[in-house]
Image: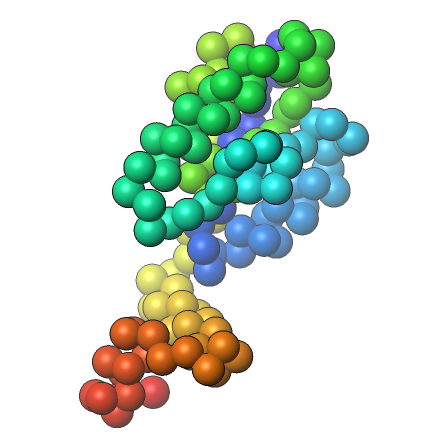
Length: 136
């Protein structure tokens, strides 16, 4: 049996682009995105129990699949995707992610947070701290 490919989406590190490439290279039913396709799984980052819950929900989802459907899945992607690895006992797993230069990551994160705050009219603690220090 082919290994299950696990793509960990690290925010602001080309994760969306990697998902698009992966989706384009797998056939129907071979690519699963945790946050959108697996019922009940959410990417709540501020929930300290969220990772454990997502792992349990994926384990239940994956375990309930008929063996032929499980065998057809070739790639799982999402935030926290490595949490699925302990649930996969029927075949090998190959996990990967994209990493980014740390300076570029911080710059991208800052610009994204600033854009998000401007769009929502929100004054997040990060943006407020940067404004107070006159960092831009």
